[in-house]
Image 1 (cartoon, helix red, strand yellow):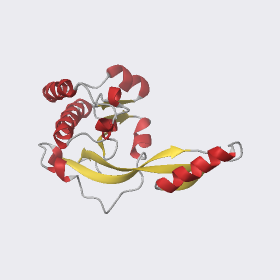
Image 2: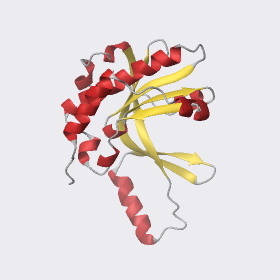
Image 3: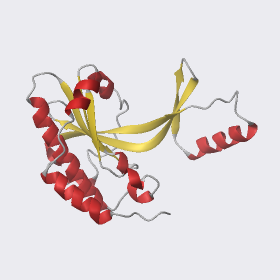
Length: 201
């Protein structure tokens, strides 16, 4: 297991970011009609620390997401046009948690990214409930899944055995696809989506 380095540096970055949130990217917003702000844990991609850091670290990072969301909401509400804005708080892949904004034709896409609410999940994990600012958003838990495809017709017998063994270890569902036949949606846990109460539906 690789050791996570730079933990203190990230704490300092989170503390600075809470006071000085990253503004929306004007270029990305107007050229691509969306923007996002991740936690900057990419260098830890292969470490278990990035997937599920200690509670204290996650709370600090969550405060950065809340501050960024508040900053972006202030910028977006200055314009009368509709928009999508949310925090995606990942359960098992915490490093992928982020703030996401979209305008114009990209709104519909982001509204449909998560389609399966999880009614058995709490409104928000208990370690985040008391973080200041969390109560200002409406939180909904969804099942999160990553799409995979597998072409059995071209796979070798060993690859077919490995794929079958992989499916036995994970939770998944299948959906038909016109191009590749079947898409396997591999469950990666839950994602909590936090949105302004005025925007939440």
